[in-house]
Each structure stands twice: as C-alpha cells, then as structure tokens.
Image (cartoon, rainbow over all chains, first blue to last red; front, top):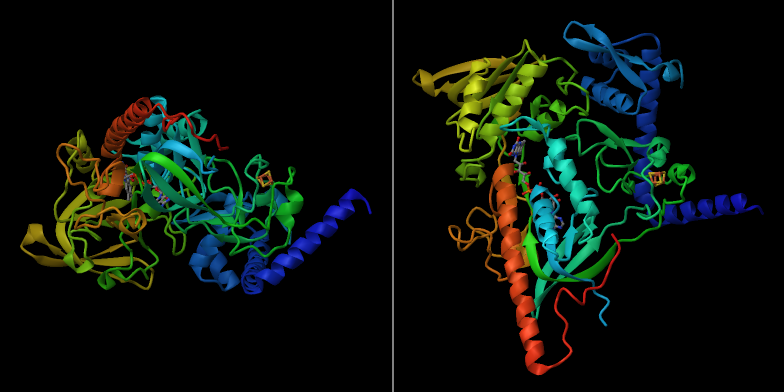
Length: 103
Length: 453
Ligand SMILES: Cc1cc2nc3c(=O)[nH]c(=O)nc-3n(C[C@H](O)[C@H](O)[C@H](O)COP(=O)(O)OP(=O)(O)OC[C@H]3O[C@@H](n4cnc5c(N)ncnc54)[C@H](O)[C@@H]3O)c2cc1C
Ligand code: SF4
C-alpha cells in the first residue's frame, strides 16, 4: 500500500475506535449536525431566489426568526453571505457569488 | 531530580490582572508560569468592545499585553489548563493542574484554520455571547493567543475532515487530558469574575426573553467583529429603535444574595449607551437607575457627556419586564423622580446591568479564606490589599472584589511587587541556610526545570 493509502487506513481505524469509545456523544452530535445542515440547505435555496430579511427568510423556511438569524450569523462569519441593503428596519442578506445556487 | 517544573511565581488566570502581574514579575527576572483555563489568554477584557472612560478599543489594549506575556523569555504560558488545587510543601507551593485535550498538537499547529474551514459542524459560539456561531474545529477568536486550533469533542461527529485538511498533521483526535504538578515559590491568584445569572429574577423574565440581554452580549454586538457585524436584536434581526438598560439588575439585592455594589455596571452601561448612540443614531436610549456611581477619574465627566448626548436617565425602580407579541419588551418602572408614579414603556432591546460574582471557588481549590461577599479575603485591605490569608499567595484584580480595568491593573502591579519581595525573602533565606550548613542547596530561581511553552 502507498504511504497515502496507509494513512487513510490508519485514520479510518482511529475514527472507528473513537466512535466505539464515545458512541452516545458522537451519535447526538451527528443528529444535531444533520438537522442543522438540512436547515441550512433550505435557507440557501430560499436565499438563492434573492436577498431576504430575517423575518422573511424565517417565514419562508418555517423557522423561528431567532434561529434564522443564527444561521445568517454563521453564514456571514464563514463568508457564505453578505448584507445587501435594508428593507425598513431589517437588513437584507444575499448569498456570496460562490454560494449562489449551491446545495 | 524531581520532574516537577519549578517557577518563582505561579500566576493563576490570564485575564488583564494575571497578564499584568506576570509581566511585572518576569521583568524583574523571575521565572513565571501563567496558567489559563480557557484556550486563549486575555480573560474577559479581550471580549469587550471599547473601554470606559477613554473609549479605547479593548482589544488594542489587551492584545499587546497578551503578546508581551507570550513572548517574554521568563514567562511560560499554559492555556486550556486549569489549576485544580494549590497546597504548601515546605517553602514552596505545589499546584495540581489539568491540561485539557485540544485534540491538536500545539507545536505542529500553524493556525491556518484549514481544519475550521473543513469542519462541517456549526455550534453556538460562547465567545460571541452565544449569539453567533463557530465550528467544532476552531480557533477561539481572531486575536487569540496561542493561534492554535482546538476541537470541541462534545460536538465532533468524528468525520475526520479536520485531519484530512490539516497541512501539518497537527490534529490528534485521541489526545487525553493530563493532570500534572508544578512548583512555585509564590502564587498570584488572578481568577477574575463571572456575571450574576441573567435568569435570577423571574420578574425580569428569568432569562427567557430573547431581547433581554446580558451586558457581555451587548459588548459583542458593539464589537467590530461581533456576531452580526452590527447591533440588531437577536429575536429577528430588527435594527432597534429603542434600547434600555436596567441598572442594579444583579447587585445591591439581598434576595439574590448579592448585597454589594458591583462598581462597574453604571459605567459600562453609560459606555454602551454612548457607543449605541454612535451605531444607532436615531435610536432612543434610556438608562433606568437608582443611583449612578461614577467613582473614578474622569468618570463623572463621562456621565455628563452621556447626558449631553441625549441619553435619557430615568431614576426609578424597575418592577417587571414582559415580552410583547412583537418581541419588544415592556419595562414597568416606579419613577422615584415623579413621586413613585408607575409607568410602562416599550423597548426593542433591554440590557440587564448584571453584577460580578467571584470567578473561582478559591476556598475549596486554594484554601484561601473568602470575605462575606465570596471574593478572596484581604485581611489587610488598607496597607497590603493584595495579601491573602495564606503567606505567599497574593491576589490581583476582580478575584478580590468587583473593580474596573484601571484598578485591576494597579492592583496587579501591587501584587507583583508583594510577590517579588516575598520571593526575594525566600531566596535570601535559602542562601543563608546554605551558607550556614555549607550544603549544596540551590535557590528557588536557580534550580528550575525548563519547560516548553
Ligand atoms: C459588561 C462589562 C463591561 C465592562 N467594561 C469595562 C470598561 O469599559 N472599562 C473598565 O475599566 N472595566 C470594564 N469592565 C470590568 C472589567 O471587565 C474587569 O475589570 C476586568 O475584566 C477584570 O480582569 P481580571 O483579570 O480580574 O478578571 P478576568 O478577565 O475574569 O480573568 C480571570 C481569568 O482567570 C481564569 N481562571 C479562573 N480560575 C482559573 C483556574 N482555576 N485555573 C486557570 N485559570 C483560571 C479565567 O478563565 C479568566 O481568564 C466591564 C465589565 C463588564 C461585566
Ligand atoms: S490544526 Fe492543522 S489545519 Fe487546524 S489550524 Fe492547526 S495547522 Fe491549520
């Protein structure tokens, strides 16, 4: 086996061993992460239609508005989204070009 | 020879008090270990926006101090490491410490954040007042020292993305916690403060009203790299038209067991109100207060400028906060300046000016006596305010009681001076004993073991 394949195999075994050591924590973390990624997909589909405010996004995605804002904050931090002017008392957000239509 | 690393001084906590005490001791030639339980040094101050009364950027003051500690040849910094106990062993102190696993090799990590960008898991970010997000593999904040990643095992799905992304093979997912010991001649306890709980008063919503914030959350909203990049309300992102502060929300209140004044709340509320008038120029800002305590140099003038800027100060007792359907908050106040008349006003955001509690259980961990307020007891408050009930252990900053940054820094300098005199006395005593017995006994400073940062 090549050194790269060797280390891929080692990593696989390590992850397997650690999963067996802390199954409950990993399972709970995976469930949370999957739910969060599903929500993120819906948000991205909605934003791909055009800029939106937090309340508009929340209602389109059937999310509590505080949760929608949290996703907006996360996406802004990691460069997936930017502010795009204002609509009344609310900021509008739009996907950054790389993320438009993705997912 | 013992494997236990030895230092002249151990500084517990790397907030602004610990950083200042460590540098002051190290500049005098003493070998210092500074131990911080968080993944970065900097303490509470590094998360503040700007500081009263000068309105300097908090990070601009804290970051150089953090760098001075990290680079000092006489200081060894241990982060993500907690001091569990301190006990006396002859003329030294022995501290038991717990180094928590980062799951990242500190030597190998170059802080490139590739693990963070690859990580698919996002969780609530404590540094941003639980308002923003971070990944499960992360560097705590932009100016963190060390710039070393860590992996949050409670949220890690063991997908292996961080391992594959790291260019230096620094991710070590099977790291374990390590309990070890270190020895020091003197100790400076700079264990800081924590906020009184936001949910303590049911009449203020018991922590359940989304737009009732902790003051540290408002610090993050006002910070240039805050969670939303601007001040908006956490319930729905509305740009607030009206913000209120409720003073003494966690202090001077027998029912909460906090009868003392936390000293900084009036000033931080005025500071935040002034910063808000800058970032929300058309918003109404109200401070509900019983007394304004502007105790320091330039503080009264600071208060006056806030009044001149149009911030409304309402003297009254806030009886209740209730959430409305539009997620605004109604403040019910008994106006002391209008013969006790009861008034109700709506605000988009309300900040509770919470008080300070001790940041660590020093009685249990370090065998230090505490005063009635729970903070470290200083038996000679007038002539030696940094001495504790244990000879050789000194206290600095908010560990001995609520105080602002100016007083914290002054006290940290004083604690370093007291500790330095104590260490010198111990060295002299060891040398005298050596001379008397002609035995080959080394001084505390000379026989220390070099350890890696
Ligand atoms: C909302 C708010 C705004 C404020 N704004 C201002 C301002 O504008 N100007 C001003 O002058 N003051 C301000 N203050 C006050 C200021 O924050 C404090 O004066 C300052 O943070 C005190 O620093 P410290 O080092 O004593 O404590 P901390 O910053 O709390 O540092 C203590 C450190 O010790 C560590 N620690 C504790 N126990 C252990 C252990 N067992 N092992 C290892 N590490 C340990 C902690 O993790 C922490 O990092 C404000 C306070 C608040 C609440
Ligand atoms: S652990 Fe690796 S990928 Fe993550 S910041 Fe350090 S060097 Fe970069």
